[in-house]
Length: 161
Image (cartoon, rainbow, N blue to C red; front, top):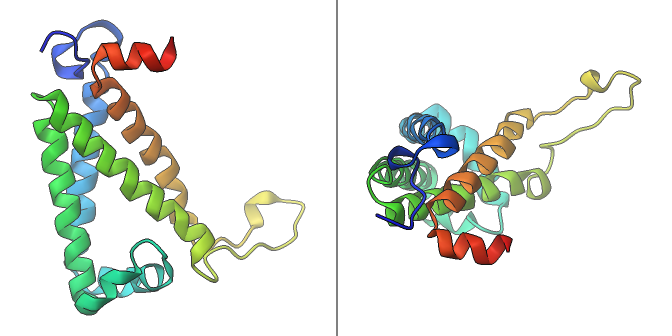
């Protein structure tokens, strides 16, 4: 695997990236499991129906759209886990993670009522119904880092050089 930056087979500053990979595996497994509950299916329905990117999932019905997303999250977790041994699978899984969190982040702009601001001198007093989406900024960035470190070094040099 010479020429690739895979955290588990690298050294130095790349080694701690293995922690990010395995945390993302746990997160995607956790998120995937949640999609198989009725409560989660009901909770994400408003986001799916208002999204220009995934509203087509409604053809599967309330539970079906959640199951679809749950299976997709399990696939991403599996690709990220396999990515510890294969840079190509690492890149594919982390790219799918980037897409997942980019779509989730788009809910701020596509779902009515997700963000309800109130004027206040204390920013912590903002009423933010979709505040749980803020975590997705960090998770998006983690997936971007994993993706970039999974690419061949020659490609990374082209992009930074």
